Image 1 (tube, rainbow, N blue to C red):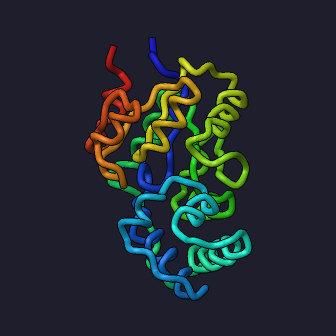
Image 2: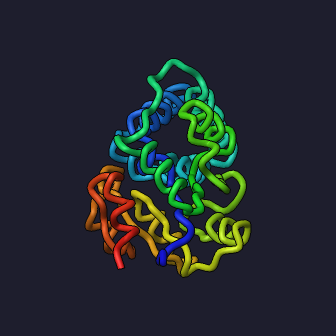
Length: 216
């Protein structure tokens, strides 16, 4: 008998290696709007949050300024000028395998709906996910709303689900929804940070996930 029925993945930093592209888009957005370009380490800290929340943390600006940076970022993200992100090794195979094994699969991401739909179409994994939630549809992580909505949509209880993520915001969202969480170490936050924020364990690569789920 499976301990979990529902696997909820974060996207950027967990299934897709988007770090370099996010940093580049945010730095270009700062240039376009006449703001000081944030260093890469500062941008990496906000990966996982909604775009608006991330911009507020990075820049000292009013709501009009937030809107300007957000729009500039989206223009760069949706263009082809910056090299596209790629899936992490084994990501596609793991998603396909878990689907074949009968798990319900979902995504809870800080991306916008438009951005997520675009990358799911490009990588071809969209049909494997039963439900997806984006930060422009709910509160930003670590608020539990997007995860709670996924549970409701799939008629699942918190004890039946586990969140897979690479940031403390993923772990905190899961904790706030009383859902277990598992970290991956190839994203933006270190393993110790994930464990400190509630991760049951931290995997070094996604290929380890099916085996971890089969443990008693």
